[in-house]
Amino acid sequence: MSSNTSDIASTLERHSARSIHYNISYIVQGAKHGTDGAIVLLHDIPAGAFTWEGIMPQLASSNRAVYAIDMLGFGSSDHPWPADMSVWGQADTLLYLFQELNLTNIILVGLGFGGGVAQILTTRLYRDSVAAVVLINTICYLHSFAPDWPLPDMKKRQDPEAPKQDALEDVIRDLRATLPSAVHNTERFDNVINDYVMQWDSEVGKEVLYQIIRQLDPSYVNSIASDLPLVHKPMLILWSDQDVIVPIKYAERLHRALQGSSLVIVPDAGHMLLFDAPDAVANAITDFISTI
Image 1 (cartoon, helix red, strand yellow):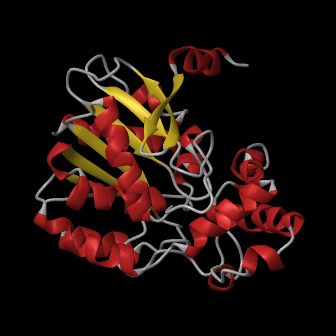
Image 2: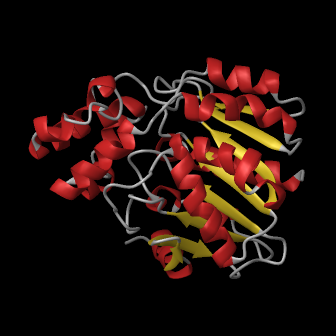
């Protein structure tokens, strides 16, 4: 383990808190609440809080705590089945979690699926306590999933009978085959792909993953994205120039709609921007926060 990795591990703490009926796991760095509020990081499918670990120290300051959350059904949080794990269900669970943790003046950062959750919290459920928003390669408007990522034939996988028809080993094989299409630096991805895949490698894991996929309803995010201009909060739109999962045209559309928003395009990066260009993500977020 390098000294840099050791430093990160020594400053990050994993905790859990109760939200509605569920135990939600999260990683935190910095003061418990932060005198200037918190930065809250929401991950994509099929990831977890672990994807943010490399940039959390750079985001942390003496006045602002940084939270990376395993959303419901992911990582070390509860994996209930059946349950509402749509963007609305996730946002509802996080609402109660934020209240339990007494989080206010939040800078909300969402990547992909997590960006959809962030939009609901910002426009509806936690509007008064969100100070600013960062949307990274986010689902938005009618684009709630790509046709062939993170699994091939995503529309087919939304069939309620799909978990019974697809063997676990086939699902894991498909994840390993399709996930690299979301990164630019595919050679290094072999070293971390297990972190993304193995949490689903059980019958319960498969059921939960398919449950999440079934609930990727475009109507759940379409109106929310359209309502973002109404909240008048500072917003950063951060996108990969080679994102084939959520095309860059959505970044441009959001930027046009959100008057005063900032748009940063990261070169030579795929949808998994935290893997391809973590320093660029950290720098863009810290620069944005400094202007608030």
